[in-house]
Amino acid sequence: MDIMHLVKSGVRFVSDADYRFKILAAKGKYNDMPDEEYLCRLYKATFGKTLNLKEPKSFNEKLQWLKLYYRRPDYTMMADKIAVRPYIAGKIGEEHLVPLLGVWDTPDDIDFDALPDQFVLKCNHNSGLGLCICKDKSKLDISRVKTELRKGLEEDYSAVSREWQYRDIPRKIMCEKYMKDEKQTETTGIINYKVSCFNGIPKYIYVSRNVEGKKNDRLSLLTPEWENAPFSHGRYLPFDEIPPKPVNYEKMLEYSKVLSKDIPYVRVDFYEIDSQLYFSELTFTIASGFTRYNPEGSDELIGSWLTLPEKWK
Image (cartoon, rainbow, N blue to C red):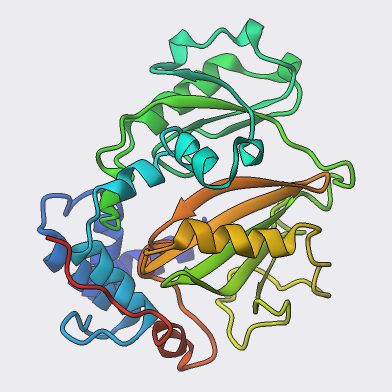
């Protein structure tokens, strides 16, 4: 970061209350602030407008409402990457689970010698922090991996955006089989399929390819008919051409309906590896309800698909 950027950031921090709130919130300054007050302030700091909780219209507003007023106890189980596995097996079949190689309470419990040459380590309660994708164990810095896993276990993933469903997950480390499609290369990566379901109905699919180095990352939002959706959020470049439908696309939509039944909104995530469909995770508050959609009016369009339930008591 160059000196001019630091100066500009410092000036903005002093002069812009919304920017200052976002920076301090990310650092945990307001962790003790009540959820409703906190989310109202964070929404204002993000979008520059007041959060309407009495009559929410946009998708982002409705996700904030759900975070505050629809706290089903079973969401915690379904957000837990370990506890959700038997639930998914019972709903769509164990063959759609990525093979689990181990579960531990601390990094020091892991016997790295017993692990295969390739594997994935991660925490069951968060996203990103502590993740280790090992493609060659002989090159692995085990000490560093343990340090990052400890950081992951210490993270309160619910704090910054008040995604309460992650708060009470018993924190553990899990190891999954490293999955690679026979068609995958270092520049293509595995494609992720994430089906957004509104009151049990798939309405759009988030199709992404994440590759180390980022320059080849692509993300497109598609309709269930496998056409470009009339909106985007511009985080990554879209695919130059829409990828072919996965072999198991109809099954993916069917399973998404099964897993989203009786849930106001949930995103059901999958991979397809060598023509086999694998479940990834369930996400109840996509991007925590802070996504900027394009063009103008898209947030309201998507919000119109979501019928809010009665408040959970």
